[in-house]
Length: 516
Image (cartoon, rainbow, N blue to C red; front, side, top):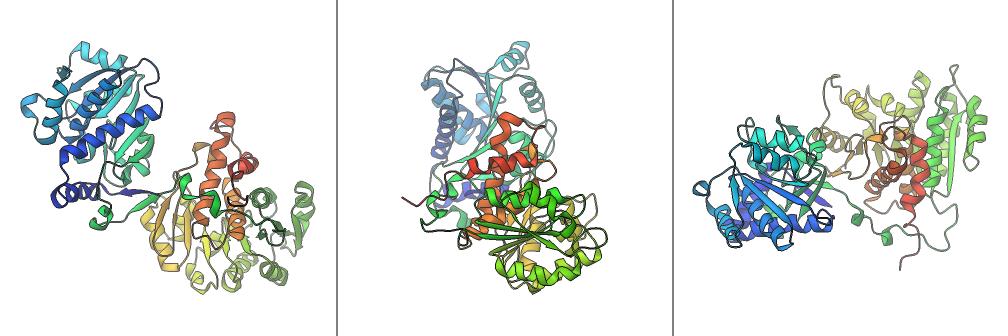
């Protein structure tokens, strides 16, 4: 897991390393610049004959820029550097690396706002943003406003050092103007602001890199540490299947879903559960819709249950549902369920009386929104999967409110549940307060039915590996990965939820085999 800290906590880590542990700041700066160059090499930015322009501020971020320039020279790369400072204004570690840069005869051009400098920026292949870093406050002043605007006007790929210039704060705030980076190389730990919109869209791919901070750095900061998942967190050995596994031991999922007009939501959830490896999936659906479900999913066992006059699940279906829950390893309730008063009552009874791990989604979340306190009565673990609108209703906030990870954390701790707040990015708040931010997914997932697929994936993987503490985070990760696999073929606008279902086998193909 990659750790993301507040801006203040990141600065505290830096101070701890230098002032308490005695690590020279110039060494950390050298490591930081070297790490940026290494990322450029590893990611192919230097594969072709490229012209690199480095924009350096007058502080430590600019010092990183001088180290990067020296490293690129060693790579044989054509590099130019424009500094907002003059040599007489430089201090400390930045001055040290500025002087070292003069050794190979590299000319640092001070910003003069000339036409030739404008053209240099506009004609560069790669621009390294080493202007402002994390110390920014207030408004973007001259000459940074001009340099940022020119960078964004150019066709160059932009690489930001630590954070794109113009990002401030920890909630994703950006100033105007703000660098729009393709890659952000973050020193030591990520910056929380880069995880959330609108800053997330300006940061591109964010890669925290090791620059030599002490191993116990996180023990010496205040504020919440957010963690972002990555593929390495889910090794194949943790998600394997024994050779004698059969369908009754490979995960049994019971899904309570569907109402007139929303049979598709139930089918997406059940098919996603099957495609994620569940041995058996049963779908409880209003009896008049059962034949539709059977016709569209040959592998799903369909339970025809009593229905209301508007073809939702009726209260009289309780005994059948109770038996289904007792049979299952995990239960899903909510996709396309409808909001009839009897259906709402069914949801509340399931929440209160079912002991199995429970995925609460969509209309089931609506059913609890008037009184979430019934979650306190849960006899087994739960995960709620609201999008922002559903979560606002659940916490009784107004339409213009933007739910935050702090809201998700507070709710999860108060009710003893996991809460997956869907969005860009999605995140899971655990019952003990930990926050895991998802690293997969893209804008094409803003399509009807994507959340229904997620419910099926969660229940399926949970039923197979419920003893793995990270399995819910794993499910969130796999759902986004399956969507990403479609990106080269369906783009952003062409993705639909069933495409995500069909990509699940590819996303999961490395898992399930016997461990080596």
